[in-house]
Image (tube, rainbow over all chains, first blue to last red):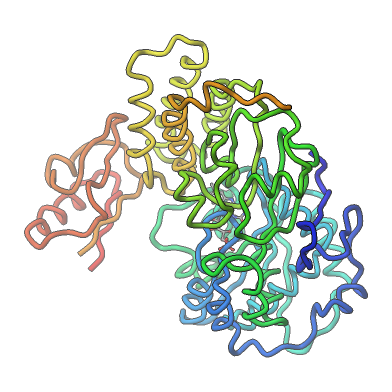
Amino acid sequence: MTEHFADVYPGLTPRLVIGKSGSRSLSLREEIAAGTYAPVATGALIDQLEQADLRGRGGSGFPAHRKWRAVRDGAAPRVVVANGEEGEPSSFKDRWLLTNRPHAVIDGLLLAAAAVGADRAVIYLSHPETVSSVRQALVELPSIPGRVEVELHVVQHRYVAGEESAVCRSINGGPALPLAKPPRPFECGVDGHPTLVSNVETLAQAAWIARNGADAYRALGTSASPGTMLVTLGGACRRPGVYEVPYGLTLGQLIEDCAGGLSNGIGGVLAGGWFMGVADASLLEATWCYDAMRAAGSGVGCGAVTVLGHDERIEEVVARLARWYVEESAQQCGVCVKGTVAIADTLELFSRGSAEPDALAKLARWGTTLQGRGACAFLDGAANLAGTFSKIITSDRTMQPVAVE
Amino acid sequence: MKVFLDPIKCSGYGACADICPSLFAIDEFGFAQLLSDGVVAASDEDSARNAAVSCAENAIKIEG
Ligand SMILES: Cc1cc2nc3c(=O)[nH]c(=O)nc-3n(C[C@H](O)[C@H](O)[C@H](O)COP(=O)(O)O)c2cc1C
Ligand code: SF4
């Protein structure tokens, strides 16, 4: 994976991947020429986000306007946090954005602070290259009348550290581990105040909408999934990288047209990061939008897609991923500790060909019964892996991988 | 009335499932599980409150 390679869908006028800045940041002068930090009224920004139907790019796809409005309607003081932790191992888009266009994120964070009436703004990071690019950007930040100070909060990299309650807990001086809900951060987050935790790409998209309007945003994508999204295409494709794509094309088209197609046939797909579990090759025919990806048993998530080559044994891949869940669990919830181990042990036996006869039935059951059980959604990811694997392992397509022509 | 279960605090003692089996069960891993979205029927309100009070880990929260 070339970490910082980025491009746009062929022929698309880019919104975020401007300058194709692959290996270097856009300078402050270039950012200002592109409209970043230009004064703009924020009184109607939340309504614009609603018209645009902007959805969170951190993985949940939650409508941005609802969260922003909930924070604005909470009692002052309020806090906004740009979540750039990017704990998802198969995603690189937030790192690309933070290293190449840190000002686009800071701009979005300042507009969010103005729109919800926050007097504190924090950028939450873990990857060292993003810490230096953002630190540099903060040094050269132009003086904007009335803007809040922007703080940097750096945390040790870990998957659960990017979960929103872990984000607030860490900023509050505690460990970067999730808390039980309720309350959620929009009610009680940093210092106990209403806190907007938003993914860095969501903020950059919101800034684009503030400057260009909701109609312009909706000019690309589909009516139910409007706009563009940063996706990370990786694994067995010819040109892995971060791509700005419109919603509404098939996943196969995205891989073909952006990433140069499959490099080793297709044995399966992990879409929506690792969180949505595993899918067979038929997922390439599904449309890349929230509804169709969900209907196909997967999800858009944070936009990361890993293609598995035709000779990768899916049983081994899922067993490895399941063990990763055991290691990354915050080990706070009894059901997560036991549930992830049960899933990993079962998948490991399956991979070795020595699973009990009821192994698939168990995996299918955990795919449902372990949903929503942890303090955070981490365990849902492990449950998705168990559930999706149990479904596809019996399908013909998985048993007969397609070799590359 | 709505109940919330804190999965970090729950240690699986099972008092909730004994006292209010219509809302709580102990799952195959030994931890409490909500049997619904947490909304409590009027007829269950007393036993739900009892379950919350009886939880040694204070893992059950009641709103409304
Ligand atoms: C285990 C776990 C890890 C997460 N890690 C991240 C992360 O690294 N970055 C991120 O933006 N969101 C992450 N999220 C989602 C956040 O909780 C939160 O929904 C998101 O930051 C909100 O931003 P958005 O509404 O703009 O998507 C994670 C969620 C879970 C359950
Ligand atoms: S569900 Fe798992 S990862 Fe999430 S808080 Fe509980 S133990 Fe930690």
